[in-house]
Length: 473
Image (tube, rainbow, N blue to C red; front, side, top):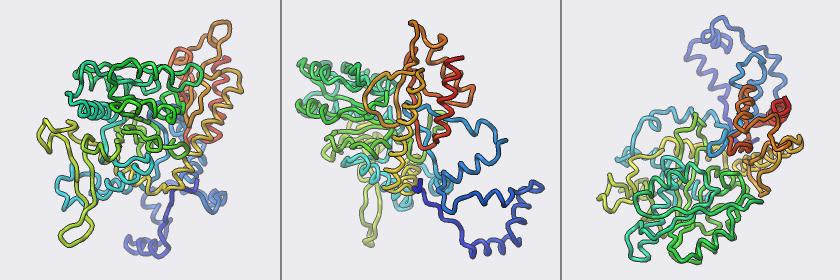
């Protein structure tokens, strides 16, 4: 992938550094750093192509020495909301600067222009990816962001009907394709408001939100302030938002909320704004942040411009200072620390600014063409992996719907029993013993599997061969 750009030091810069350090060449430099450890033989480097992107270079050096610990060679195929993407080294280098790393909330814009500028660029790039009007300067994570979106939709619906938010007759409809952890957080947030939470079934064949079930629930006569759909959904299936949207907007009091845990998908499929989504709330950890055993994460929140007053968190805007120079400041901050509590749209006390700045740096390094290239690569690798596993005869599809970089398969059943009586959880455990994180168990016999640009063709073959050995043991 020629997406991330690397700018090396010039020979002039290197010579200047040597003079400052009082050394004569590279050998002396590394001798002082490493001591008696021998350097790599120059002949190995002759195998390097003249042009390699950062990820390819990293893989090359990782594979040179067969004695590299196995933990550094673990193949990760687990997703479910957090995905194993490549993080360029430049991000860690820039984020280690004290200007970004140490500040808290930039309450004083006159001394926080760098951070505010980075957050403004983050908002701008995310808005372009999502096709939405307004993006805030981040939330805690995707689950909290989606729960806040539901509360915002409830306020909008109540304002249209001149009723208090959270009326006991209100029904929030959530597709069964939404991440179950997100649904749990929504129930916690909305639990004290009196509203009911209803589920929209999935189509048993495609895995998409069932259109007929949605029609039926919308036609029951109750008030539905919000309908929540995930794109792609938790099982990896791409939803038909073009058919869903007009059904929801046929009721003027209903808001169409789209969530996503993998915004890279919008490099190859149409974004939520294309389908007239009212609010988007999702996870942005894929952009320059590590998996880190599940956090910290990066919540994304976007909405139509007419709903900006109901957005939680903070929005950075561009203005002019007293000398007519570009300047940045919070133009909307409707949290309880800044305004009277009764007018606050959220009690979120901070956010994930550090991770948002990482995302801004990542996307600027990635570029528009690189974003599409990585998205396409994720799509292709996932389809290659799925085809390879199905061709083994040991798996069968859980659903037939189109997918992006994540899909669900069932362990094939023989004589009403699983292969070798292995459940999905046991299969994942046995694969982990072979340094493969094989996915997430979503039922006794089904596994949710993802693939990213960090999974090469050799990793896919490793998965397929080891799965065959485990299931036929």
